[in-house]
Length: 374
Image (cartoon, rainbow, N blue to C red):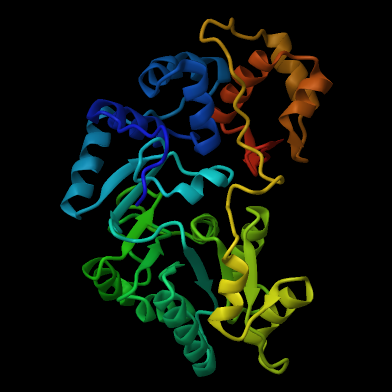
């Protein structure tokens, strides 16, 4: 993987602190970055958390030093490693998506081309024709120098990975590194690593994947890719979620047309009607991706990270009431909240941190925030 300009390795102590902070209750990617921005380091943020929790009015479990060290040791036994977003091994394409994971668990992939990447997704109950098409597309893309990304699911994902074992493939997991799903693809995961491919996940060791974790995985499949190919997909399927996420990330979306009589073709055909590029061979994909650049998008907004001095005084209870009055269940831009409430950016950041740690708000697309209702 080519080094990222300005990237620097974390020390073991810093890596442990990053892991402790990220594994703390209610600390997602956006909150993690705001804590680092506010306090300057994960170590300082961990020291400040008890007071933030007290102000938020809800106790939060902070991951202990020993828990973090145990996870790191456990990952090493699987041949996996934690890679931080500031380090050279972190996939560069993920720097251009919202809410990118601050830490990834990764194994393998040292010799892959992480810049020329194509995601291939589709139905778990794929047809024979869909499997054949997937193998053809993936094989041709691999032979043309592209690394194929998918989610290790049954059907289309499995076919895409198997077709590119020799040329390079990346499998994104929905669960922890030791909880590969489905079980039948554990041998495939080993084959991917044995032949120079990569496995990665943002989930902790021991995490059993739940339904809500698969869309999180899908955003990484699309985020790692220059474009997403949908081979077969029902009208409501995870593959269409991946395509939608790809569009939000300003990635190219391709779809293989199918028979109107086959429910597995409904999603792909609908994507084509909505503007996805119809493809019949790998050349159709390569022609479009030749000039693709994940950082080109004017639509991309970085997660809200105001530049604040660490000595900024804490906001008052009156400030908190004004923010809560401005918030609702409808997501709104933080800058708009600043305008509506009249609060300073520094007060806004601290209050959102407190509410986030208390589980009272939720973020979407890194920029929009809303009240969370039980």
